[in-house]
Image (cartoon, rainbow, N blue to C red; front, side):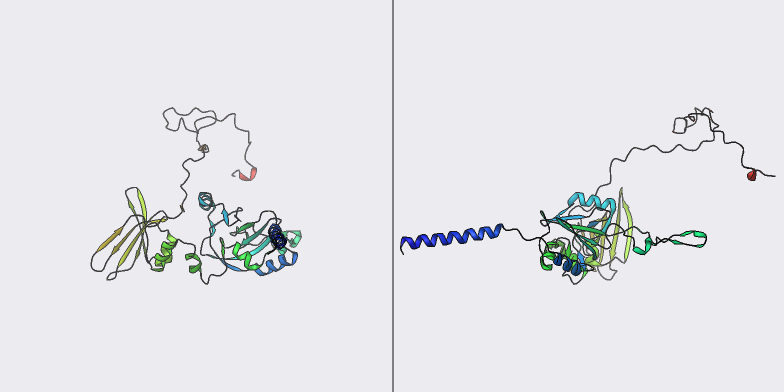
Length: 332
């Protein structure tokens, strides 16, 4: 090949690579108005299975680049404080979708704030102009939400791309709650549940998924430790005693038909900490003064055990003059 041909080939290759690099730098377009309408129509009222814990309250979850926040200890602290709106494996409904500048908010089960219906804002007056309360149901909302956040703006997306981005929190393809729940667990726990086997370290939901709800429960105390024991089976079959300390399986005892007893206490599975320790420091407060039968200005009895208590101090000043009782309260 002639040098001139090599030069032409080189420049052609350079041009192609430059064009490919320029195409890679072109950002995706903003989401169009029609796509917004299509996605809202397609996903509103969609039933999904939950893959992550959602806390109750006005603070939901944030999902960006596949990472959820809050997570870990922060999420468990919120769960302990406010309780769960939904848990992994629960079925929920997407009740509203709000597309903002750089994120899409998906509210589930009504969202964290109860919205008033339009007819609840109508004021009705009864006889003599007395207003009639039309507020209706005032129960606190029990929904939550997740914000799917993008870097600078919401790009053009199709439904499959959106479902893939929401995979850490929503399962659109599960056929049952059990299938959705098992998919959120570590492989060892998943295999044990499928085999109806309890591992030391499981929580209550996992045991129920593996064995069902217990026919019998006992509450006992071992020294200073309180525990609850779930009992599965009756003689002449094998009987399993699953002991919970808090929300975690601490001991599994199996009584075989032939009389053999198998006890397992070593942790067999490590899970994220699901329980948050109770606050060790309580806010300082002083109880209100207890009622006293002493007259105003009367000194307390020094021998009384309450003499140095909160109610020992006399009132700061003389009592107000409240005057005689109303005439209708005076006996004849």
